[in-house]
Amino acid sequence: MDRFNLAVIGATGAVGKIFLSILEERNFPLNKLRVCASQKSLGKKITFGKKDLIVEPITDELLIDSDFVFISASSEVSLDIAPKAAKLGSIAIDDSSAFRMDETVPLVVPEVNSQDLAEHKGIISIPNCSTTPLTMVLHELGKLAKINRVIVDTFQSVSGAGAGAVVELDSQNHAMYDNSEIQTSIHPHRIAFNVIPQIDKFTKSGYTNEEMKMVNETKKILHQPDLKISATCVRVPVKIGHSEAIHIEFDQNIELDKAYSALANSPGITLLDDPKNNHYPMPINSEYKDDVMVGRLRKDVSLPNGLVLWLSCDNLRKGAALNAIQIAESMIEKRLIQKQRNK
Ligand SMILES: NC(=O)c1ccc[n+]([C@@H]2O[C@H](COP(=O)([O-])OP(=O)(O)OC[C@H]3O[C@@H](n4cnc5c(N)ncnc54)[C@H](OP(=O)(O)O)[C@@H]3O)[C@@H](O)[C@H]2O)c1
Image (tube, rainbow, N blue to C red):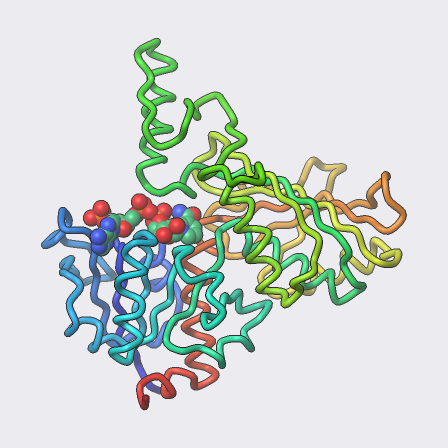
């Protein structure tokens, strides 16, 4: 079996660290692994299995040496590095929003649209961490009947804003108990003991960028440009795990048992739906899990053809690092990596 060289850019970050631990857990056909981060981390040691990896600068030599370059740093870094990596013959799998809506770049959740990988030109984007679980549910339920409209409200953990936001929540929690001054730099308001109905900047329409990412990315991944979808994204004082309340209107009635069995048989989804015993998805039972946890499935009392459900998903795993690794695995399986190397 072929083995592959990987570079992880942003290896010291919230997603990068999880990426490395998932790589250890899975049987990824790894040959060589190299790690990069910002200037301040150069020379730092990162333990991977029994080895110490040294954080190195991003050079042309490193990009040429890598079959896959996973970029999980910032849009600025992605805009600079992804096209270079593709030009030098490696495949850039990009975590940022920089290329997601670029028509020449596949935006992929392997369980939903792995067929789009065949169109790649050296860069593949992964969706926003809230878009990924939403598309997985819509893809499965959309096989039962046409979806006319989706309303989604998110409850997003602070790790979605990076490792610094987790540290900020911790320090604000301590400050609340100590009655000391609260420092706020990442979110527009204190997040400890609060919820904030704003993630990213507001657009002219009144929606935030995060909300419009969910809208536009979902349409692209599902190949449904006319899908009616509206999102409200909210930051909550949870460390890991995004949750979503999803209201779906179909063009015909869907029996609940059909929806249950469609979701129960979906790859990457675990049903956790036992309300009598108070069992349903929450960040505390989706953290460190690969699957999207789905529950609270019910008929919408306000619509003849509506379903309502709730999900929780580890934003650092399926919302980011795991999805990226699964894309690489899918490309290896489909033999799409050779195409890039032989360019
Ligand atoms: N967090 C999530 O749930 C999530 C989900 C989906 C997508 N994403 C996307 O993933 C990316 C990373 O997010 P994160 O949450 O992991 O952020 P993070 O915790 O702030 O980590 C950022 C990483 O990027 C590195 N970095 C910063 N500037 C760099 C530069 N100029 N060159 C190379 N590396 C640089 C940092 O290195 P230092 O440690 O040296 O500063 C760190 O390793 C973002 O594009 C984000 O939008 C995040």
